[in-house]
Image (cartoon, helix red, strand yellow):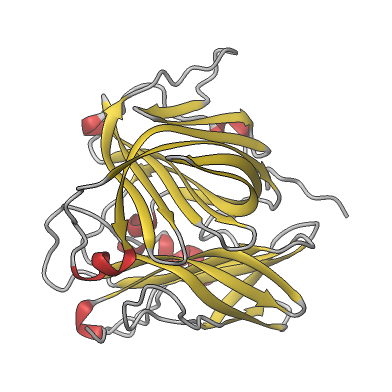
Length: 344
């Protein structure tokens, strides 16, 4: 059996928007989660090009170490030209950060050369907008080779597609797809240098997005050495009894994604800097139960300076050691919960 890494999507879906959209609140974003293969560090890298702020795209960078040390960058930067040498809009860049689609659905690169603030995961628990006192020189160049077909949320399970197309739950997600990859690269933090291999998740999002009414989620994925993989996203059950979004998949190393429903997930109830047990269970459409163990090795409370409504979900990004049968690998996890539902 062969694997179509496009998943049937047109290559144009990979290209970025070259011109500012006329409508407000349209985003063109490239985001990456990356985990060093042994868990030495995890990274979250992203650019958000928002239509009403088109000349200075938002930059997101977190490099998290298991001891709690974190290197973080928030802000914006002058927009890079989207047009590559072949005349196609393959580049999404701002200031010190640059993504390039080298070959659609197969190879992307990301590079950074600039500064980031040194903060701590422990400090973020009580202050998600910390004062940036110590700055470090950061430089990296990373190649990301796609290994699993892309997942378009809402495309695998009929019930999930109906929920996303029915209004606000789809607007939380926004039009997007995600794809697991293998990575190799060089990272410099001051005088420290890392040559590394790893794996991660790339997300392409393009369209309208809003957060009003959002009440939480649990999102996990991982690519294993054999090529097996899993991913899912779920919102908590609704207080009004209406359907909540829930969808996932397993990948068996080749072929296509096998649709699955998350039936047991580790909801966020308390903020920790690491060491959370985060097991999960998926049920495939052909009736198989897949149990995967997980323990986080770096947790960050999401940084931000925007004033949020009362009882808006607290978001945690984390990097995890996963175990599926006799295989182990590092992967991602993002969770959020209403403060009123948490132990704070």
